[in-house]
Length: 295
Image (cartoon, rainbow, N blue to C red; front, side):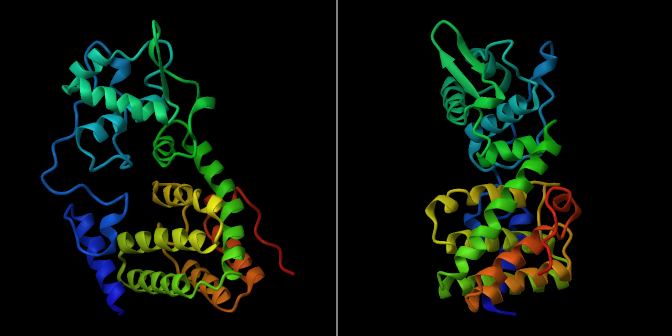
């Protein structure tokens, strides 16, 4: 096993145990919160029963203290429909219910406003905005939708979007000849192979996310690169149209390896075809897009 593979697998196990592990995984947005972080915020309950049904499975804002926890809680409640436009969001009430300061509430609402979830207007207050105004490409909103009533729509939409983005990225990457990134992609395939053999789903999934992010970076298109967060979010959310390691198989690993081989030989068509084959490995994606035709 290479040094990189050993480091990445060790770090992934440490992060999965709630410890801050060494190595490159420390910078990943889905790393576990450090030990000793404050307990989660209280949910709204009591007479406001409609405000107390938010899920807590998401991890988009994990590890950011009270501010991040409040963003997470309120974001989930808005996306799930537990908080609607029929009533304003009163900062004083939020502060009392969650036992946080005005500053924490104010900053949290600003984050949600930047995501298009709420708007604040004089004499109207802060209210939830319609779905058409939400930034649906925001990784946090992607995750919150994946755990809410729109779960099936989110899976379908992510699959359709990835079918558009990633084959194109693979085709472009083959024409750029970035040997440094190609080496890293090969390392990720090696890591996934070792993790697959050991039944280490955590390491496999994280290497898979890194693989797809690197591939989009290798495309050399800055606009595509800005969409890499969508792919990462799709790979991270539970039950989404992920590839490779939610149910690791030798077939999916083989498709990853074929992409790397096509990039190394400058075979744009081969890289694109291998990516399309990878995206239909799992039934969730196959229901969204047709399998590539044989020529």
